[in-house]
Length: 264
Length: 233
Image (cartoon, chains in turn red, purple):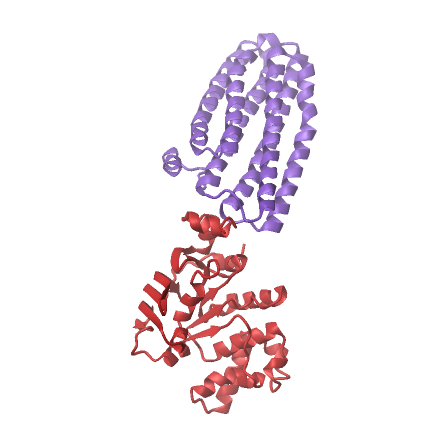
């Protein structure tokens, strides 16, 4: 049994919480009253069939939807410990994205060197000290388990790396700015099984530093990496619980039908 | 719940392995019936038939285990499917043990016949317990096939009856042994035989607990009856 599904003795601490969250793509209501906790230093997985709203929900956490007109949030996402509602209009989305970063489905390194990719967030923040940046980049690359592979070619274009390496580089880029939460939107769906395994391993390792929210189409992946699972369908949260409970004995029939492959 | 998976192949694999368990159950049940018959008729021939079936029971257990491993490896079952497969694995082990107990009864019957003292012992009184035990196993298999938790609960309660029969029988055997020391050796055989019958009841009980595990997802082993009743309700 994986150690990721057994909780340590200390109870989990609330890191963020969506409260009665609705989301509209213009007239279309994509999320319907979603309330869910996100616990600190834990992996929470969002599962559900295509179009259920899990990616929409994930993107609310770093205000990605602000980039398009006509999108509207209703309800709250509170970030703890300062209890700030990150959806509030007075909160700067750039500030939110500093605290909550994102890793996408397809690795998307910038057309820059490996080093500059990871240094980018620090430079955007106005960090000038070369030694500080170098230390941070090295630490982030080490934390993302890619340092040994790139330390001798750190000036090369990031696009020379393999898909799995590029994705780990993107994780390093996220880690470099010390975010509180990292959002993963199907981070391994473009990768082969070996690269997928290394990303999953990495997720289990970095959760001691950061809180993780992950969307995955791969149910076994959710079972392997997460501590908590939320099953969504048609924009609603059907069931939320500890991963071991959801996969062994879900409370709702809809959840059971989905995870046992009877739904469709 | 919708009974069918998106993969009909998965459905047929689960169906096939469930059928195999029922076949194994049927075979073991007939072993017990034969063993009881051998006991009541003091028939060495029938006792030999019981031990003859053992190899088939063992082979079926190995087959079912192989099928289970293959399904788990290829389908990564979850929730109810996973519980069903775990339960089948345990039920199979229990049934194989019931087969062993039937063979043990057959061996004791032979030993008692060879001792030359069969008629002077209260062996016929074991019929009651033996019929209870084999009836319990049949009910457990029926309940397993239909995933009937109410029937499973009834079996858990009934197993106590066999235990009481067993205790009463032991007291009676002791009086026989005290009256005539020559009866000690065949009485001990009869005691082992009674113990084997009592164990069959325990296996039926284990299978009933598995039915509740499959359907309700609750592990009620070692739980007090009040707790079990509240789970089943």
